[in-house]
Length: 302
Image 1 (cartoon, one colour):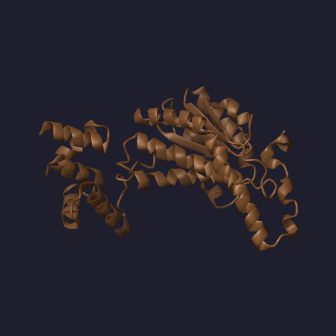
Image 2 (tube, helix red, strand yellow; image 1 turned 45 degrees about the vertical axis):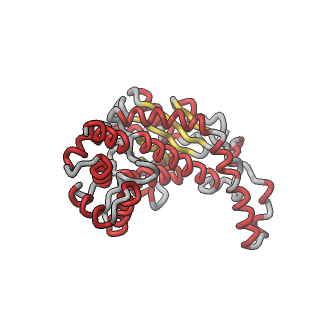
């Protein structure tokens, strides 16, 4: 029963919320928020297991789908949308699906989350395959839309994961890799966009970022696969080249131009000792996009 789940219970510490002044409300919110990273930290082994499985599927050409309703769905859409500009992947690699479709991103779509079949239809439109991963997101862990989607994914052999904010969530039974972070009752009863939503965002940050690290999308701690679509990002690209290679700004800009704007190729050219962008790009391809390995390959050939 939902009433028994901690995300829906009243928070006795904030029972006088309606009588509190603004500063007191904010202090209570902050005190509750501090508990969230601790709860997430306790579940890092489960998050690691799912993330490692995601990396394996993505390396093999599979895709990652987030599935949710309401706030949970919006958080999945947000994380997916940020992967292409941050890591240079295609929009198809990480997809966010929300109950009710795009309209539900900005306004509620009544009844969509209560359907056990709607998510299967959404995944069919995406041509889900057994190579893909579907991660269901639901604070309560009982959203029918998400459960139905996970069941469909399981039926065709796709890998499944889940992110719930209650222990023993029904959704967890449908996932190969369940994550259950018990965030407890909210300062405003049942408003799971608060602590539960924060926990979900933290976990999605972990999954996508660590997965992209595992795919070679990062060199040192820099976003070297960033797509420089504006002046700020173009300058950031030059700065990354300067920081990692010791080159001056003019050399960095010239090399970036030779590399057709591809930061990783420019870095490999400078540190691998070649002016040939095609050779540097081939080394990156040979080493699955890992910059350090590509540099070592070129250095060993010289």
